[in-house]
Image (cartoon, helix red, strand yellow):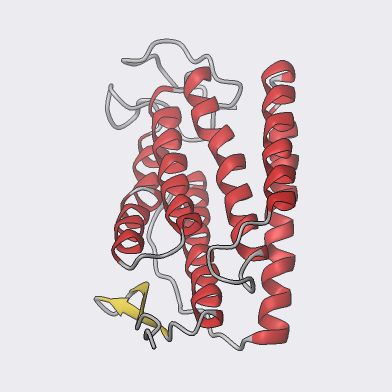
Length: 233
């Protein structure tokens, strides 16, 4: 529930099924949950650059889709927390399912030949997305969405642990961030986690394809992957 001191702002009464603990319209009349809104920048700006770089490097389309999907999630979450409207909530929550399905596909296809397509996995994930979307639009129960999203995240975690345990030894760089809002922390950490997941999946894939991936840190902080393309014989 939102704090009792919340007041109506530019976007009118709340219609979403969720209203987080940040006081509404406390910073500006135009944004319902200011910190929960602006913290989404981490899910919008870095993935956009990642998508552009992936196009320039000629990477597989699945990774371009991963970056763009994360950007869509960030934009949807921005709209949701800015307005607290039900339609914007769907623009936030449904892309979370779709993007996570793309992440799952990438992780399970890391060790396949270049530009291969796993139609069985693709069909399963598309069907899962359609079922979740249909059911969620009918029941409008946030817990259902959270459970379905949790299942996808759990799948990603298990797959990542498997890859790390049996194939790689990788140190996770320390992450520094400042915020006073718990839900804003959720945005920052999930956005960062999703971005790092894309990097990890991309690193695994390009290493398998012998692209010599290297992790670099912009300004000594932000991780990106650069690599030498496979030499043509």
